[in-house]
Amino acid sequence: MKKELYRVIIVFCAIMLIFILSVVVTEKNNIASLRAGSSTSIQTQDNNSVPVPVISEKAIQFQKNKVAVWIIRILSGFLLPALFLFSGFSAGIRNWARARSSNMIIIPALFFVVYTLINYTLNFPLNFYSGYIRLHGYGLSNQTLGKWLGDSLKSLAIYTVSGAAFIWVPYLLIKRFPRSWWLYMGMLSFPVLTFITFITPVFIDPLYNKYETVQNRELDAKIHSLLARTTIGDCDVFQVDKSVDTNQMNAYMTGVFNTKRIVLWDTTIDKLSETETLSVVAHEMGHYILGHIWKSVALGGLLCIAIFFLADRCSVWILEKSGSAFGFDRLYDAASLPLLILVINVLLFIAAPAENAYSRYIEKEADRFGLEITHDNKAAASSMVKLHWESLTLPKPGAIYRLWVYDHPTLKERVDFANTYKPWEVNLPLKYGQYIVK
View (cartoon, rainbow, N blue to C red):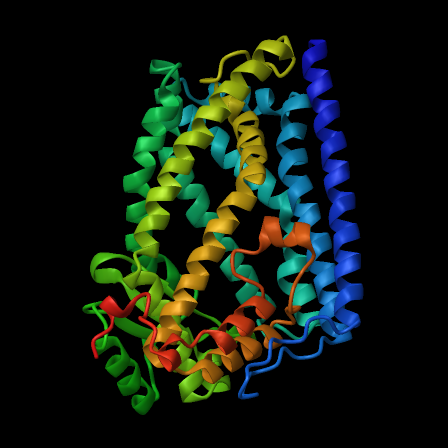
């Protein structure tokens, strides 16, 4: 390898070390600040605000654990594909695939299957610890080992089969259009993201849990009455039996066209009051009414174009400077998959703060819509407190962790906003009043 590549590797490692140290320091300072009581909620003049709860030592320990797991995941996302490259193992898998087929569609598929299975095996200890042992240890999960393992294998099967079926597409484009394949792949991402968003609620999600109409008929009637006050149109509402997996609460808006639906975890219905549940539903309605799903698809497609472009330029440069040390010198070689994954992981890591900033913005706007349609500030704030409390989430994280991980505003930010946003009380116009039927 040439000196330029060695220098880039050394600089990148130094930057990551500084990044990790920064995370550790900011988390330590944040916990000290929280313990000092600086997370108190903003109080309204009528003293009717919902306070941010005092943090527990259990929540602090869980946050420390989350941060440690997150750092390990970042490093594994870089180190594992690098291991395949620098050890020559990637070229060895390619040779194995070539020995079994000369078909340019089959070779990448075989490579993808082997790479995915090895990667799954290497990541299994961390996934098992973080997704099963840790959550049970903190009382956040009641999932059986069989259910956890079954869900994990289902995800592996879906990813492996779908990836193997379509991995030949980028390699064909790279070979035929070496200078512009990234644009074609980026353009393809728009219909692909739309298709995935369309089919996931109907075909993917039900593989893991049981979906049914809301069993509390009175609550269901109130939800549909709330829906009728908006321009959302036909929209299904389901509850899902997440209580077989977790003690935490959640709700989400998913799907497009005739698959759009609001999904409430049964734990959410069981642990929140009706008014709190309606405030959660109103938030999810806001996502669809404000076009957040379609905007996310569009921005996701644009991000894919940018990521593929930069991945192409970076990967070609790395190959030029590698001196064939990886056992291949063309990007259309199936052995380049770990290289592309490594570069894309780095680029996604760099882009994470901007992506999360946009996500936090649309989440706040969904909060705003929810408040404007319900006018129930107390229910909105108390539901957020309960949702976060059950998940052992701190009122706010350290600055670096927030930038790279938080795709929602912090608990403190959301509670403060819910406590204070009341334009209707001073006869100010509603920002999203055009979407609400009076």
